[in-house]
Length: 592
Image (cartoon, rainbow, N blue to C red):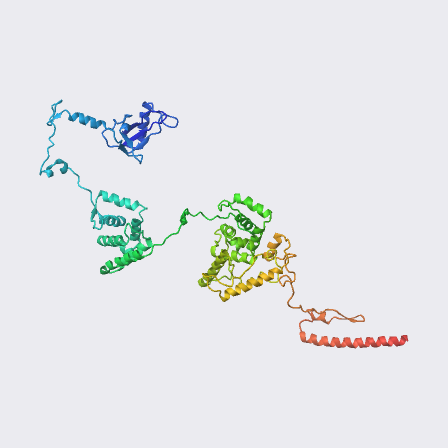
């Protein structure tokens, strides 16, 4: 095996490039021979030396090769490396030494005889009509042909693809190279879809060569090379219909497909002047949390959303900004934090969703009323919310389970988002109030904000807008009532944010929660039965112990007799009481 090396000289040294070649059994042995030759020629290579490290190139087949194992400094005067850095090519405009020697030798030849040596040269006269007897044609090798049927399925399909409409029974070496290049060319989507479709359609894999030839020609008629590149699913569908159709109907099928694709409108992508379309593959990965989210971490993420120079995958620079606005108790962050804290499953969404709640919210959401902010957050989570893949815990609830209910919920949420972004604010105001938010609770500082927006209803609707429906009129009436009610709300008092968040979570907070609310007043629904006194003071030192005797183990076995005895004891007690009164009366008489 031949090994050809070039040793390039540095520009600073001003020396000529060197070349050398060897014949060796392996590259390792050739490298050893190269080191020996360079050391004998006192050529040092590497950093800081006059020559760079040797580079192995393709072996040139030219007449100007230096002797094997000898370093040549003149080979690069006639040849140079091509664009690939491996193949040698002749320098344009340079006369080779072999050409000069041949021209000088021809000057000494007269009538086929060398005048210097007297040698009679071979006669090169033309053989008119005897071309078949020429030794050049007799020794010309026959082309190497390969039968297409013996090749793999991919090569069989591509062989008919390069046949230009003709059936190929066998291919030569050049055609095999072209087939291999087509198979490896991933940029040629038309050929790649043809290969993949052939491997995914079962009748195609079992087809004979003539059917493959006809199928490939039909594919080229329906999807021309200079036309729009077909999708893989469309190609597979076409081949399935083509193989399932009768032979007599396949021509009509091809015409129908060609007309259908010809009349199909091409979608136009509207892009800005400097807009770059990025595929989904190139989109950055969503940020992941390293620990389980809490209300505290969500507050920091909300604060990071107010940072204009935020990078989602690197929150460290924005964390200082978040800590600063939390310490300053900034009003817009406080409002959003209180609203987000009231959403039950807010900890189930990932970090980017929480940040986008703030970043994509219009200015009216940050400065508007709490109902608008709550509607925005719930609608945004329903449409754009992404569950945290690492920390989300599924909790069964009463959310819609059918596809129709989910679709209706998403359509309503999308309408709310569009209304808020356009400034109409016609959201789901008739939605029933959650059970955990009581209607008679005192308004939090967020709910007592003064609405400074002036509402001027236009009696004449716009030309492009549809007439106001009954539902729309109901919305306007409710908004007018809310506007009038806000005028009577007293100004808000400063309250601790922690207490507000605790009240929003449903905890009892002094000064915010209503102590008279049934949720906090613990009352017993039924009065406990009063237990009878075991020993009753009858008077005058007499005590009734019938209840005590009834609960004892000796007298508690039979109920009816005790009841009877109890009545008898009560009669005896009354007799004793009457006797006692008589005694007292007698004593009084004695005293008098």
